Length: 344
Ligand SMILES: C[S@@+](CC[C@H](N)C(=O)[O-])C[C@H]1O[C@@H](n2cnc3c(N)ncnc32)[C@H](O)[C@@H]1O
Image (cartoon, rainbow, N blue to C red; front, side, top):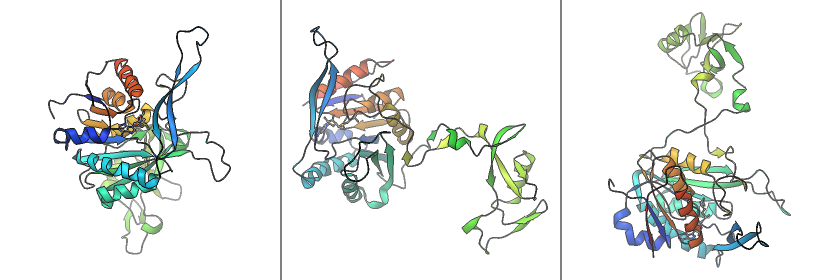
């Protein structure tokens, strides 16, 4: 692993991984894939035409890949061996993230439960991928994708906590202020279901209550000025805004917009994913120096972000036109990425 060289392969991913399995087994802290998903669509690449003055500015469509199948069984027969072999690539603390949508996420989940074992299922993440869903003649407009997260071993997986920036809603509870700054109040007495008869009550600074913390801890917070006493003598803890680096991210990812047509990262590839999405995945599931893989690489967003975050990477993509985009994106980075290339 010490002698790892970043690598871009052009070709079919199962063929590539099977051929290189002895070298690749157990190396990857993170594999993220964004595979075909039974959409029944042929995807193309949009680019502005150059050259002929009459055509300048016109948008050209060049074909890339077909997400068309004989049916569900055909699709799942394609996915199974690829998912199986990808598990073999993971380190003991590694994870596989599979990006899909409503078409097949439930079927692929049962495949993954079978391959990884249900206990190794970690999360189903919902990414809100558009603010303007298409109107439907039946039902509701689809607005989200699903990312299925599996650990090679749920006892060993190591995910880094991820925080997002505060927004208007998350700032609202921080409505109090003292000389140390803005703060919100956190309960230190058992509430609701926690407030059972079995819970021990004790007296602290004139109030008897089912406290959630020991006297020693409460005294420490008192001395630090972190205890708030309400008019009726009830105590709560002050949580200062300055002490919170952000809001812990849950499995609902509503704060990452899709790639916009006019943005710097836009390549003209319809299924391109935003760098901010990959940044969250890679920061959560790996550390600098780790090896990250993407075997349905598209425009190479995974490698772009992996490189920026100091991870090592391997990409596989079978369509020549998208491989060209990957190469050009890697070249345009502030510190252009070094890598080897193969195709078969
Ligand atoms: C949904 S796109 C991935 C988009 C990518 N996440 C991005 O940000 O650009 C899926 C990609 O998988 C590629 N692909 C499909 N089947 C493949 C296979 N068997 N081996 C390698 N690549 C494949 C397609 O050509 C397509 O570029």
